[in-house]
Every structure is written in structure tokens, then in C-alpha cells.
Image (cartoon, rainbow, N blue to C red; front, side):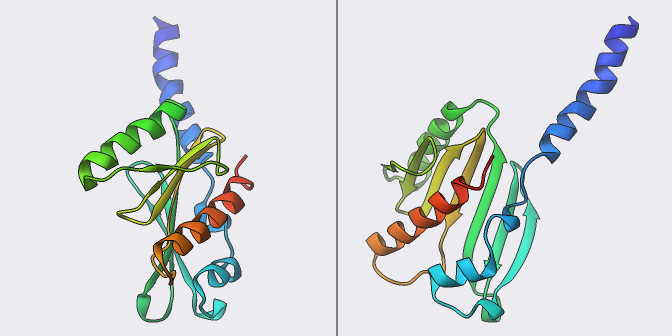
Length: 156
């Protein structure tokens, strides 16, 4: 009985500690790096941290609170299959297909409808949306993949 009671007390604390291990997404990119990808002055970029229902998010904004980039990271409870489930869900919601992406994380995909890159690396799911990027769709996709490769190298 005492063992069960101890397990009930320790398990939530252990789960909380694991959730707290999640990296702060605002530390994965500098304002200068964001500025180089979206073509704005680094001094004008502000970062805002948010805790979402599934993980943590960093919003990079420019002058007038214009959204430039959103970076979200969260722990993948079920491994790579969780990203596959996310892709299926997003395809149904946006009535589009996702495009598999090689070279970013262990697996990844591009969601053209939202201009978002999703990837799985080191038991973490990452999402990058480049709202402030200019150019055609292919150029934005290429820039977002470059950001993804940079971030995945920093995840442990």
C-alpha cells in the first residue's frame, strides 16, 4: 500500500520534471538569425514566450507587432508516429496534402497551406512558421528548411 501511495506521489512530480526539460524555443534562434531569414533589422525584433497546450512557443515580432516567425517545440510522447498523426490531422483540417521533407530532423513535412515546416528530432516535434518571409512559395519553403536544419542541430 505504501509503495502504491509513494508511486502516486512521485509519478506526477517525475512527469512535471520531464515536461520542464523541454528546451525554451526562444534560445534556439537569435534575433540576428531571424532577421537574416526574414530581411528585417535585428534591433526591431522582439521575442515572446508562450506555453501552449502541447509545448512551448516563441513568437518573433517586428515593428508594429508584425509576426515574423513562430517556433514551437514539444515533447513527442509517442515518437515519430506522433508526427505522422499530426500530418494526417492537418491534411484533413486544411484539405491539402503535406510534402515530405528530407534533411530536416529524422522525418519532416511541409504544410503549404500554412507555410509551416514540421519535423521530429531528439524526441521533440518542432514547428516553424515564417510569416514575415517574402518571396515566392518555393523560396519561403527553402528558407524555412534552412531554419529547421539550424534548429535541429541545436536540439539534443
